[in-house]
Image 1 (cartoon, rainbow, N blue to C red):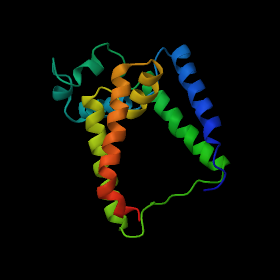
Image 2: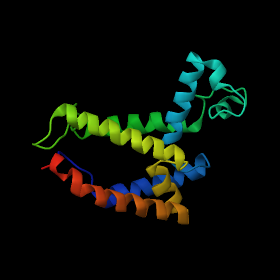
Image 3: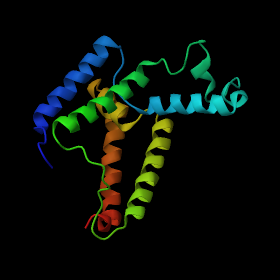
Image 4: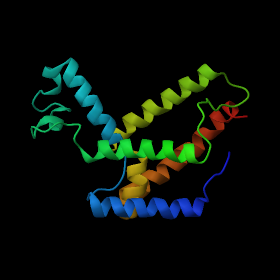
Length: 169
C-alpha cells in the first residue's frame, strides 16, 4: 500500500469530522440511512402506491412534501465517496481491483462480499443504524447500546473468522 496515513492522525481527523458533523448538522455520521432513502425513492418511481402506503415502511420518507433526496445524509454520503476518491488519487492509490486470498476465485470473493453486504444492510435496518453510525456516533455519545453492539460485532467477527480464514490464506 502506497502512502498510508498515520492511523493516529487519521483517528484524530475522524474525531474532528464527527465533532463538526454534530456542530454543523446536529447529527452524527453513518451511511445506512442514505441507502434507505435512495431505495425508497427508487421504489416510489416503480411502485408509488406501495412506497406511499400509509403506515408502510417507506411512507415516512415522503410525509413532509420535500424531495426525499434533499436530506443531510445523502450529501454526507456523496461527500464521503468524493473525499475517499480524492484521497486515493492524491496518495497515488486509486486502482480498480478485487482483493482476495490465493485460494479463492474472483467470483467467490464477489459473492461473499455481496452476501456480507446484504447481511450487514439488513442488520443495519433492524438495528436502526450501521456500524459507522453505531460505533462512531453512538460510541462518542457513550451510548450503552452502541458499545454493546460493537462488542457483539467484534465477537461475531472473531467467531466467524475461523470458518472464512481459508478465503484469505
